[in-house]
Image (tube, rainbow over all chains, first blue to last red; front, side):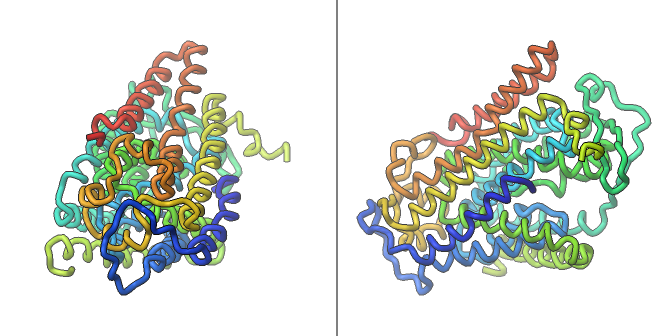
Length: 319
Length: 143
């Protein structure tokens, strides 16, 4: 989380001030819709900002991307239609990936050569996922989202991680594409060379991950990291960094589909993006004082609740 | 500082990767400033929106096709024709963020070609093609 995020910190108070202190918008717009809501409109972007700020704080110590928390929680507990929540969710994941990307690339924790072949298939399939998601009824997407989020809970609970997986011999494809590198492990104060294997299977899985990212509007770090780390054998830090960079490409293509279809509302997307990024900055600082395993358990509990909510909402049992 | 190997970025990142990082960093910063700046103008009410925020409260509960039918917002690149409306103008910052990977990819493609690395150049070009296809609206909207 580098210079871009530091500068963004100055923008947060400006955003809050604009929502709180700004005059009522002009009423000379083209559209007239009966406005008989009990809650004033400005409560929602402010609430979104606060919730996303809190999600951003817990996302970093929990080791998950904000996007995967955003869609089930905002989709389940805010009055927005899932079409707009997914459009905003992609923006949240994209903005986070773009903010982190430059420093990860410079430090060798994200590898352009490792990312590009995987991102190519994932970004192509994310277009398909986004188109499917916007064509399906919200109830069906909610059921699928609920099942997926519950699957993520299981994955987060059971999945193991390997700091430095052993890759005895890289496969031919990864050699041909030069998918290898060196990074500096600050914790062990040494340079670590890495290479990968099982690239063809990794490509197939990333195609599936792209569909999920586009379909649900979530960042897919929860799936990227296990595939890069456990399957392909990239070191854990390179897997996490490269996963974040891949999201910047995958979410860009899916975001275009939502944008072209009109499913991005600034009043939902912008407070979410800014809140999540400011929260992530606080979360990164709290990393030293918070017990990550405890926060991770909270987040798993939160996801379990949000996943059940999405599933039951989709089945018409909890509206 | 010079003794710390982690400070020597060229050891861990290729020239292509460093160039990509530079373009992405600058582009993201411009995008975030655009995003927040236009949103502040939108919330201030200085410029007339297509849909006033108080009327969005009923529209954002409905599927996107309902919102489009009521608001008259264009699909595909149709929003560009309504860029003078403050709410639609926000899409400029969002489109910028979704676009900035393309110049970065094209730059590293050129660098790879100059080094004779055709495979990497082809991968970068293919990724640009995918992003351009998504952005075009041919598949995802524009009707």
